[in-house]
Amino acid sequence: MFRSYGRAALAAALTACVLAVAACGDSDDDAGSASTAASTGTSTAPAELKKVKLQLQWFTQAQFAGYFAAVEQGFYKDAGLDVEILEGGTDIVPQTQLAQGKADYAIAWVPKALQSREQGAAITDVGQVFQRSGTLQVSFKDKNLTNAASLKGKKVGNWGFGNEYELFAGVGKAGINPGKDVTLVQQQFDMQALLKGDIDAAQAMIYNEYAQVLEAKNSKTGKLYTEDDFNKIDWNTEGTAMLQDAIWASTDKLSDPEYQDQTVKFLEGSFRGWIYCRDNPEKCRDIVVAKGSKLGASHQLWQMNEINKLVWPSPNGIGLVDQAAWDQTVKIAQDTKNADGDTVLSKAPEGQAYTNEYAEKALAAIKDADTKGTDFKPTTVELKAGGA
Image (cartoon, rainbow, N blue to C red; front, top):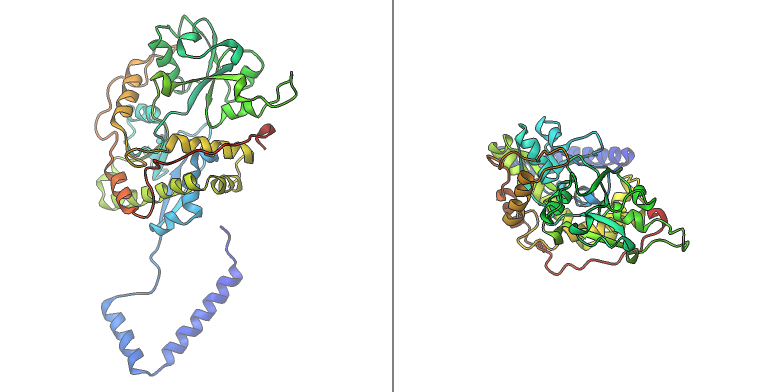
């Protein structure tokens, strides 16, 4: 947010004049008040905001709208924090940035962060914002790929880099060997391989890549594709979903009472941001677009709507870890092998891998808003060509 230095200077000058007049007054009452203030140590100066850095796991988009909204709407400021949001990218590992002290908090998928933890990163999940997985396998309707079992013998795209474990767990659960019974294809972070017919099923996030196919033109009709043109395999339905976006904190710093207090305040501000985006999806779309997202307005509104579906409802309250979902994520991370025969984790996480302590305190401080979203209803979004 830009400020006018001219106005600031004028305000400072007026303040100086007021102080000068007060200083020259000879009222006994004024002198007594000044003496009392000095003796009690009270001050009218605003408290200094605590600077905090949040590392995102990807580029600016509605996936992180709640955090941008918390900045723009002053929720962090109200909690005494000055939060700087650090954009992610292909070469940035958020949990590593956190572990190395380059950020105070980070947003990361649970299995990836737990893998980093096993490798020595001292980090703890303190706010499980996403309650559901947003990962799909998408195919054209005529392929008739409606569940994990139907992928046998097909060309199946996936991104790798730890994004493939829900897929591998799904086909494994269906009795399919992912290394032998399907042809795995390294997929780019777009849907061109599917649209060109190079693969039968493509990996996609419901809030991003799936929207990309709906923003593409069907050459046969000259119109945009519709949802009726595709099938989606949803890992939540298949029973192999893993927890995704969570707020991670430094495990070592959590022994410091000051950092504990800061964490509660950061979570409160963040949760308020997500509540705001639940209730004001178009405004949050605008916030993200204004922040310089490279994705268009209709795409961002779609993304905001789908992200809200992953967050809300939060049956126990936003940010709290559901034990069953956590256990399922850990089990898949331990038991599911990728094409190279590797698993995410070699053993169950040790130490404080997650805690609900700070999220519970943050929720207790939010008495003026619905923190569960039980009555949340998504909107209908009309995508435009290219997501414009």
